[in-house]
Image (cartoon, rainbow, N blue to C red; front, side, top):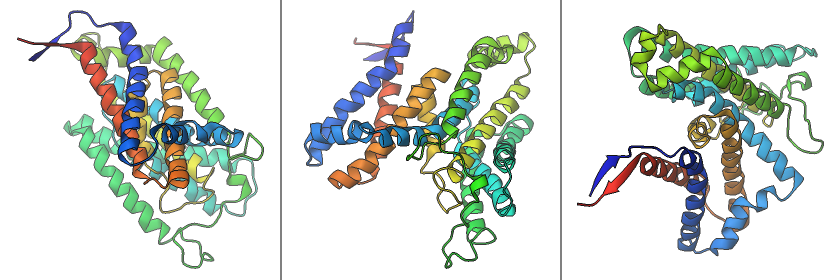
Length: 349
């Protein structure tokens, strides 16, 4: 048996592959639940259907989908240009710390300008953290996968140091968390009696903006050319180093904003664990969405559903929280498998 490249790649199958991967993940999930000793169809209903059967569930889908969509959009710029930024989790953390520090510094200031300032500071915080692997890549040709990934763990240690130090609430009974943010530093809720906040609307606006830039702007054209044919891009005069910087800055800003939306949204304060791994899950979101803004939007909601389903399965069926990660991993596995078979065929000799 050997693998050989197909002479022609089916475009319909490229966009149908995520749907096929989701279907295969569902089928594999039936077997997984059976092995775990649960009724597979009841478990699948508990995991994928029950969490969104109410208005509150749909609102939570938007809350958890917002950071995934934002980060996925940011990462898609780099992935299209073959710039592999794996450190969005660290950029989210630093962005949340930067915006959270501003909220705590002006804790008693009741100003409508505080929240926009927090968002801007968070974006710059994420960009500053993303600038480190960008500089190492363009100056020393360092592998951006390693540098961006390692910086994630440094960011988490910085968070731990600050939340156990200067950011700790002095009246918090020695618990490692900041004081609750002032109302002026919290995202407004857009759906009454739920946690759905204005960040979801901003995520939709970011999707629309990215669609215009990637599909209709010269920057998007340059990114696509560099990703598909780097030598042709060099002959055309495209500056690859500038696009590396652009890719990291866009991803850093989006991740930083996602971070402040977490601490100024559902959390309302800085805590030791800001994200359950949104920065890493967003990598799956970007590829399931085929690096297209609209696809990333729906993929982000799908991954958000996996978080909700995992929590619901824990409560209703006493399943381990690791089920969420298993489903996300299976989805990526089946998507990569479909991609291989789309581009290559098996030959038996």
